[in-house]
Length: 144
Picture (tube, helix red, strand yellow):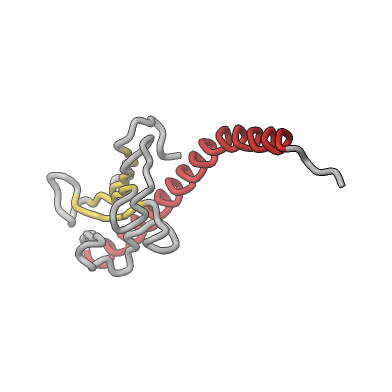
């Protein structure tokens, strides 16, 4: 019976290692972008809920994972908190009140979600009740 030589097996392993090294950054970028879009969708949905709350109560509702008062608002971006890349919270706009303006924020990789996740291009995403979509990262276009 004839098999593979050690040299042939090593050549195949080197080729697989090179292909893996080339493919991993692309895969990691895809995962980062997918989680970013997931966070953006959660922010938009939370703003819709905030607008509904404002219609009923004439003020927005601040929430976070820390205070346990998120109510109908989801403070994580994924299917579960542990599987999420971003933690969501809401607070009044600077120099304003909850009766006038609210900011929704998505922070990547906190200790209450997947702490290994990082998004150095966009970092923290924000959406306010005036419709402004911003990020604290280096990338110019983090929102579609």
